[in-house]
Image (cartoon, rainbow, N blue to C red; front, side, top):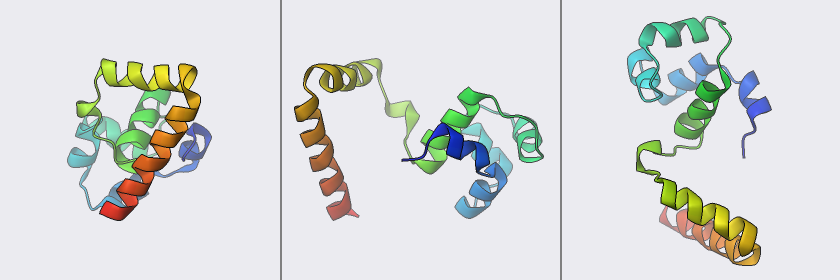
Length: 101
């Protein structure tokens, strides 16, 4: 969906405001202090791990606290060993998510 290069151009402050969160709420979910987040919003270079967490949590809306290593291992296995099954499951999951929304 959104690539790292695209996230470089996205304004964290704008994302936060669109979500209706204050700095403490927005940045604490990423493990960043309010003052650190404020510096990023003011133009300080944001490290790639923080950008990726921002993308996952606030753009993709993924609750990273619920992801377990074994879940990731299953995904990686399906992608590499059963690509057609992975594509089929991914399509079914998206269809189910759209119906639920």
